[in-house]
Image (cartoon, rainbow, N blue to C red):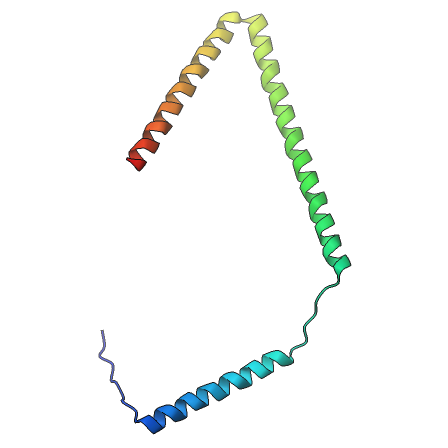
Length: 116
């Protein structure tokens, strides 16, 4: 790390620097105030809200239709396996139940270890 030299200014120089900084800040603020400000009208905001609602509805419908298609596919597979191969259906149910129990226990124990 390099050593930095500290220059001690006398009171008059410090006051001049402070005044120069204040003057520069005031000039900058007056320049900012001169920029034109455009505020959109109420119809623009209402139209923007309406389009966002439409986009949200479209996205929700797409997600819901995807969920229904996947759910129907899974349920049809379960029903076919139940009627065609009941042993496979029972094995799937047992394996799924064991998996859910083990997953819940491991997540709960991790949560307890983090908090404890």
